Amino acid sequence: MALNSKYRFFCEEKWSLLVDTGRWSRELWAAVLRELADQAPAEHPQTKRFPFPEGERRKEYYLKVYHHSRPFGAIKDLLRDSKAFRALKQGAALSEQGFHVPLAVAAGEEREHRMLKRAFLLTLSVEGYGLPLFLRNRFAVPLEVPALREKREYVGKLALETRRLHQLGFVHGDLVPTNILVRPEEGGVAFFFMDNDRTRRYPAWLPQRLWKRNLIQLNRFVLPGISLQDRMRFLRCYLGKKSWGKNDRRLIRWLEKKTRKRRLECDRIAAQVSFRELMRWNGPFARNI
Image 1 (cartoon, helix red, strand yellow):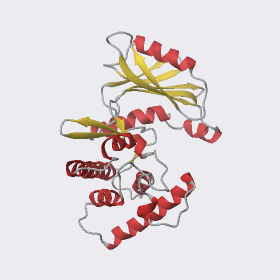
Image 2 (cartoon, helix red, strand yellow):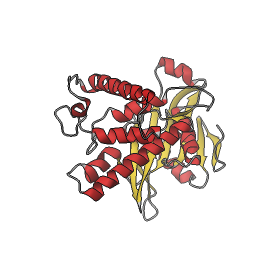
Image 3 (tube, helix red, strand yellow):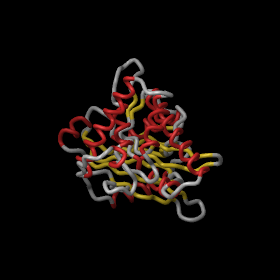
Image 4 (cartoon, one colour):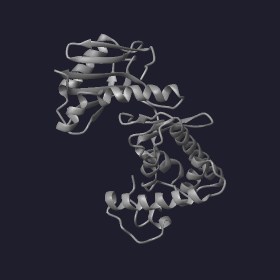
């Protein structure tokens, strides 16, 4: 994957680095190394807020550290980029297509005899709210007509962004609501796709159904202020349909079946109730996020 010319590759002892040349510095690298030295090995990636430098010039970063994989994953890592490199490259590819993503300042991977030991991704902080918190703050109470219209507008906008994502061949690795950040802007909002280390882009000529996985990930959570009508409005905008065809209805039934399955697996909820009741905010079967 070709990278924007602002990124440069170089090596520092056992570390291979991809850095934004306009934002990277020796001082920032030294601070990252200190943070890495304090990180204990963990099975899952660890993310830490990372202010740098001190004083009036301070900016907020996030440092995500990946530790070595399990044996099978370690073998695969011999032949592929680390998750940190993949996240930086996919984020750059998304940004080039006009999607909002956190700005990656640097990614690094530490290897010994080609074996991946550690990796990191450093991104600039984005001011905004996770989608569940944004919905709770704006739309989780009885709504007046203007707020209701605003919610419908935002549901449609997110659907169109997700549709464009898939039309361009991207499939997000984990498109759950907490991985969508909402930044209020003049005249509306911007949606940021976060955590892109497992995001992939497939060629347009390659038939694939992985986009359906993203729809399940988005659909399986009970969300503040989001009704069954909102879910159907999202799907209608995503499909670009004014009325449901045979294949559309088949997709709706499939999504409901898969959502019920995921709620059973993740929330231990197997209630034999309507889908509206199962997914109702603050209903008896909610597991609020």
